[in-house]
Length: 266
Ligand code: HEM
Image (tube, rainbow, N blue to C red):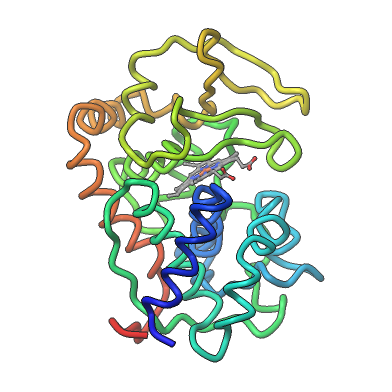
């Protein structure tokens, strides 16, 4: 078994099931609970795979312990934990998905330790993961204690260039971009060029919709059009390479937040 074997199994699932976006969200929500300051801890540890309590039961993670982990099950059964930890696999899966969908190549480090039970989850999602119906002050409250600047928040949000919101998971509904399976800078170009109107989803969530194409933006996405976030949106819309370069830096930092002793090889 080599790293290339695992990657090729992941690529096959991403290609066959078009499930790259939910694999990115899986890695982001595992790593994204990390915080310093009032809340501490939360390094990526795959605690979400337990559904008797903790991260696997957080509303913010709806669809991840079920849909995402079901899709990944053949790979998990084959390689975890003997060849790779669950938390490392989730990191790798996201990075392979991003590259497979046309995004940048991302270096993956290994050595994340898996939670043994749900008790190793963070206490709650409050203050850990962002809400889509809130604006800039909320984004700063969530992301600054993870070590991310306003510019980093813009680069990370660019991941919404792929994937969609599901009414039965988050309550929001629709895809952000017209080609939701291509990882490029269209999140930024579309956000700047389209006009959005208020909409309430069937689940009662407020979001913004572009009538002609049916694409959506969350309130938290369009908040990035405010200064000082906006200048970075404008740069990434003009220059996809700049987006990719900054995205890789902040994404790798997110995936390694709170981890110690990571290594370059499996
Ligand atoms: C900035 C604050 C953020 C908010 C408020 C937010 C909110 C959301 C919501 C509500 C969904 C829909 C979930 C569903 O219904 O299936 C979603 C999906 C997604 N998010 Fe975010 N997110 C944020 C940041 C991020 C970051 C930092 C990343 C990764 C770098 C990311 C990657 C994704 C992806 C790829 C999906 C699509 C999942 C799918 O298609 O199943 N998001 N996000």
